[in-house]
Amino acid sequence: MYPAPIEEYVRPGTVDEAIAALAKYPEGDAFFVAGGQSIMQAIKSRLLRPRCIVDLQGVSGLKGITADSNGVRIGAMTRYREIAEAESLNGAYQAMRDAADRVGDRQVRNRGTIGGSLCWNYVAACMPPVTMSLGAEMELIGAGGASRSVAANDFLLGPLETAREENEILLSINMPAAPANAGSAYKKWGLVTDALPVIGVCAYVELDGSGACTSARVAIGGLGDGPAHSGAAAAALVGNKGNDADAISAALDAAANETETQGDLWADPAYRKQLIRSLGTEVVTTAFQRAAS
Ligand SMILES: Cc1cc2nc3c(=O)[nH]c(=O)nc-3n(C[C@H](O)[C@H](O)[C@H](O)COP(=O)(O)OP(=O)(O)OC[C@H]3O[C@@H](n4cnc5c(N)ncnc54)[C@H](O)[C@@H]3O)c2cc1C
Image (tube, rainbow, N blue to C red; front, side, top):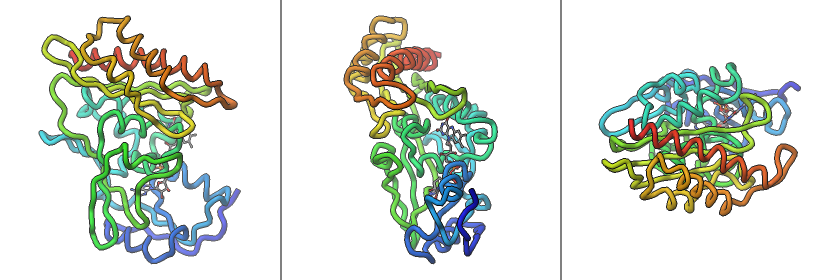
């Protein structure tokens, strides 16, 4: 399919120019394009018929990963490939690398961006549960320069829905500085290698000096209503150690039991629950190992 005719293509150099280009049009007539891996399918199939597309590739302020004592900032236009290779994310934020390394195929990883994934918020996407589990904040800026920071939990609403306001641009994904003994991991399972997952699970743990978990977050993607935290798994992990396989398995059982799973062409509800148990056990065990090292 070819897109319906598009009147204007804009390639701004700054965030202000990008917002101004979008704001020239009524809502739904102009769209940002980041890597184009999701929105171009919608435009080509004419589900979306924009009059203008605003290409963010030239906006340098949106790119790159910086890590310092305050935490880690990932520019919205940072591509999966760069995230997959970023050693500064090892340990506490390594789940980001796990996810980015397995998103789609090589082309998708070379073109697709973390910001595009989060603003699209597809139900099965990897970055939504990862950012929820890592406690990330989305930094947004709107017309007139007003900026705000929104927790991933509050930014990611229902499927294909976010808290981004009309004309706002996502600047960056920010994660707070993590304690030394923190680790995370992500894993997905899909019917086709390197495709969108049927279920993806992300775990983040913090440990005390004895290796016992003091805080945990477990988030699950691939659910019908969008990604969700498992409060039951997080609570069950606290106080336990990474070598306690029974405790980890019980925590993931609790996650599977409390999570509502849907049936579709790819998996029935019971199979999705089994994936939560098996993937979840692997990622929690890996998160403990990373936190301990
Ligand atoms: C074959 C294939 C396999 C895939 N497999 C996976 C997978 O395994 N896991 C996975 O998670 N995803 C997968 N995807 C989806 C992929 O991750 C997309 O790259 C991602 O969903 C969108 O990122 P993008 O940069 O291409 O965004 P685009 O498609 O360019 O944009 C997506 C949306 O975000 C908006 N947007 C983009 N950037 C900004 C910004 N800075 N501020 C405000 N709005 C913005 C756009 O206007 C648009 O509405 C796959 C896609 C394909 C084609």
